[in-house]
Image (tube, rainbow, N blue to C red; front, top):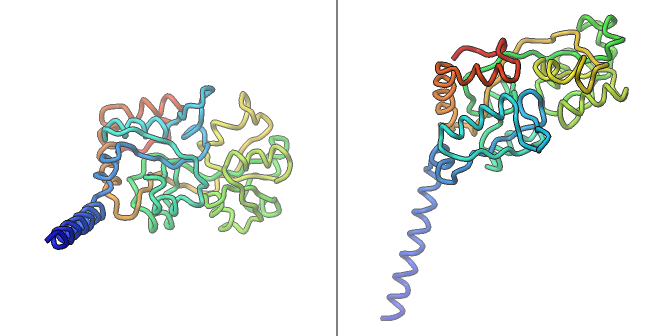
Length: 261
C-alpha cells in the first residue's frame, strides 16, 4: 500500500511539473515580464540615446523613455551593456527583453525581431578630422578611406553597401576614438550621436561629420512574436498624445527627429 501511495504521489508531482512547464511555455512576453517584475533593456554606450551620468546612472532619450515604459507596465527597468552584433542571440536567450538603443529598422532587424513602430528619424554620417572635411564631401570621395564602424550596426551595413574599406569595433564610441587617435581615417556613426558627441564643446572638438549616407528610422526590437511590441506601440501613442515623448526629446535636443505616433 505504501509503495502504491508513493508511486501515486510521484506521478502527481511529475504531472504538476509538466503542467507548470506548459504554462511557462504558453506565457506571453507581457505576462513573463510582469511576473518577473523587470524589463531588461539591451544597450550600448550611445549619447544622446543611452549613456551614463557622473554617478553612473543610465540616462538619455531612449533610457528615459524605457524607464517611462517600465512605469507604464508596472515593472522595474534594468540596462544591460551588450555587444550590439549579438542582440538577436541575447533576445532569444532571454538575457535581455528588448534591444532599445537607437536601433535602425533595417530589413534584417525586421526579419529577426518583433519591432515597434518607428519613433525617431536618423541617418548614417561620415566622421572625419575637421581639418580634412573639405576633401570628403561625397561618398565617392571617401572610397580610399579606412573606416571604423560598430560591429553589426547600420553603419557597418552602409560601409559595405558603398564598398568602403572598414574595420569593426565594439561600439560607435570606439569608432570615434579610432578617428581621434588616427588609427582609422574616418568613422560611420548615427547622425544623432554625431550631433551630441563631436564638434565644439565636446570631447571630440577636432572631429566633424560630412556626408549623410542614407535616411533611416529607429525602433525597438523584441523577441519574434512578442506581444510587447504592440504594448510599446500603445505606450508610444499615449506618450506622444500627452506630450511625454516630446518633453523627453526636448531634454536631449532631438525634438526635430521625432516621428508622430
